[in-house]
Length: 298
Image (cartoon, rainbow, N blue to C red; front, side):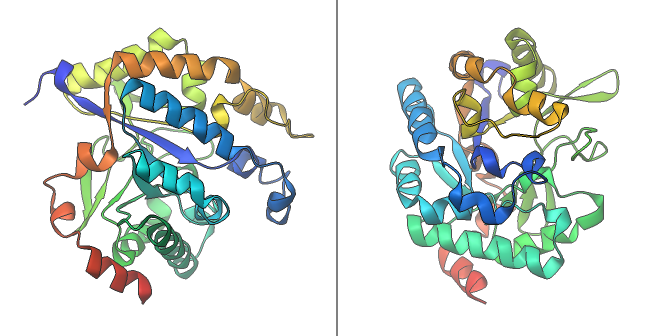
């Protein structure tokens, strides 16, 4: 078993733009997306430059909607040596879709990303971590579509998502599908969020670092960290009319995010999801490009 200073964690980025977040869905209609200023390309350039300066490789869970309009972003991810993974096509919560519609969405996204990149897409993350006890059939869809791992469950209690009783670490959910939950730290029998996004912007950086180190040192497990490109963009357009909670969560400490990320990259060892969690698993041994293409084409 590796010692804690040898443990490599997985750095992940959910590639979507500010107007696509689930909390803004009541305020921004989907048919307005194309008319909004899209800032994802410039933010991705900044992120890729930061990772390159630190020598870090990451996994980018990318929306098909973004990839279709900005194929150059996909090319930059792949040429930079990073893993390209799927965030679905249209950023619809898995819990809001029927089984048939969910399968269509994840299959469409996978095929699109593979066509653009020329690489097998193994990983998937549900928008807003929206796989839970009420839609575990989603794992059947992901396996059928040819994915080899999912990172779609956050084992915490939250008003928009969460499955607090789920296993905290990677586990097989189907014969060829691994679920790798987003990282939590267990304190006094309660799972606390230790990864990414608004939590990282809300908590003082030393607390975030302590939670991740606790997972590496006490649990001897690799952690997952996630964030979004819009979270380094303090100058993004402000969405009018949103409620206080959504405004607070979305805009808090955007100006501090890039500096905190730089410290985080220095304080831990980082790698891609497939390298950290998938190598040597049953899911990986089943991963063959030709079979995946056939599954997606059906």
